[in-house]
Image 1 (cartoon, one colour):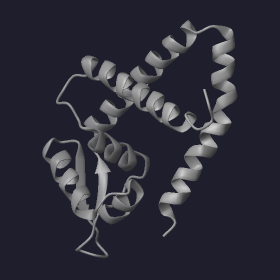
Image 2 (cartoon, rainbow, N blue to C red):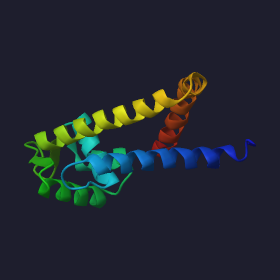
Image 3 (cartoon, rainbow, N blue to C red):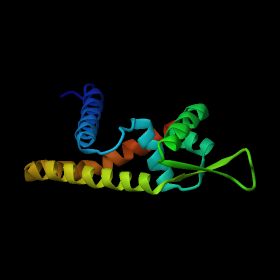
Image 4 (cartoon, rainbow, N blue to C red):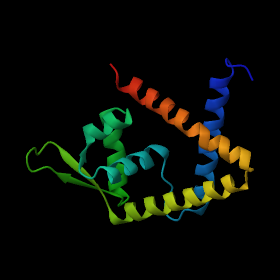
Length: 151
């Protein structure tokens, strides 16, 4: 494979892996299906309880009104709690509900088990290649994240 073809091939494989993992896990999930953006917001709120809608929008690189719509949907589904801030009545803190935390934990456990199972099926050389690629993949992710935050 030429170095010119690498970016497109890499992006295609990563997107395909992500899609296949999501599909496999959705088959096993109880409760209503969540869209990707909803899961991303729930994961962010679980990692940063009390985050504001505007801070969540910035972190997810989404418009504020898009995040507000997601917040309304997740609140109606009983997965997110919106709490008005005492110091600024116009602003709200977002908190995951216990049900959301349980769903996220179950999703993460199943995802880890699924990926672990398939990685273990690979030969030793392939597992070593994946491990060796992780630092470069992290640098790639950091570069993309950094570029996204630079005006």
